[in-house]
Amino acid sequence: MDYWPLFTASLLVSFLSAPFLRRLAFKLDILDYPARRKVHKKATALLGGAVIYIGLLAGTAFNWRLFSPLLPIFFGATAVFIIGLIDDIRGLSARSRLISEAFIVLILVKFGICVSFLPPGFWGDLGEIIITLLWIVGVTNACNYLDGLDGLAAGSAIINLFSFAVILQGTNQSAVVVFSVMLICACLGFLPHNFRSAKMFLGDAGSTFLGFCIACIAIVGNWAQDNTAKLAIPILVLGVPIFDMIFTTIVRIKEGKVKNIPQWLHYGGRDHFHHYLVELGFSPRNAVVFIYLFTLSLGISAIMLSNDRATEAFLAVLQAALIFVVIGTLIVVGKRRRSGWNTADRREDVRK
Image (cartoon, rainbow, N blue to C red; front, side, top):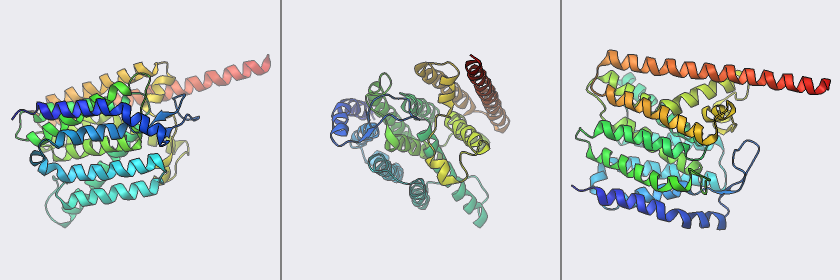
């Protein structure tokens, strides 16, 4: 079947709807205003998530039957998008968002969207439900946290989805492949409005929608014959947001900034991976490109792993973990050294 009309519809509808939705955002005051913890300097439209959602919807409208196995995911992602949109417009507590996301995941589990690698039985089934819940909610919020520089979240999502699509291309999973490529096209239609001198932001609606879709694709995709490789591939593909979430959480707990899960969800600070890169001397655009390249390198490792076995899967994840440890160490050392220089400069100013 020729899928190009679906891809073209997603790309064009996304690209062409952006100016209209931007004007609508200013008219309805759905804007992200500058603040101390934010990078941008002027009010920016927050309906970028709607641009991607409408683009994806346009593509799926051409052939609903093809995507019937993925309809629970699409409806779940729609619910996440609506919750994020309410949060962008009116604001929601972190606790409300977390409970809502968990409830949506449990509904998906009821429809069979669940990891499956533990031994059958009560404890195995319960363990798979818990892992599914943690994975989808965790990746959804990790992608939300990654949305801190122009083009970062949408561009990273494109690379993640491309890696998944390449791995699945040779398998009998056309619905997942086409869904992934349509989502890529929807993101590509949005990216010109976001990457350079951003006219629109994804907002929580867009970043959580993308994170939810990617997390679910990681679950339903059949990535390899070996069970260990099946688990390792999504971890590698989504290594950057996973690292950012873990590293930032560790730093915040150590510095006493967060003490519970709602605080962790609600806390907004310039202490993510991309923020540290900018502090270390990268321009915002170069920091985004650096993360793009790093994400792509992990995706290439995942693609190579699809034909390997448990030993190679373990070594690939170990290698990625060691690289992240090195990067995390360099960030911490650079932060301390920079803090020391600033303290020394203030003391010198006092002396003068």
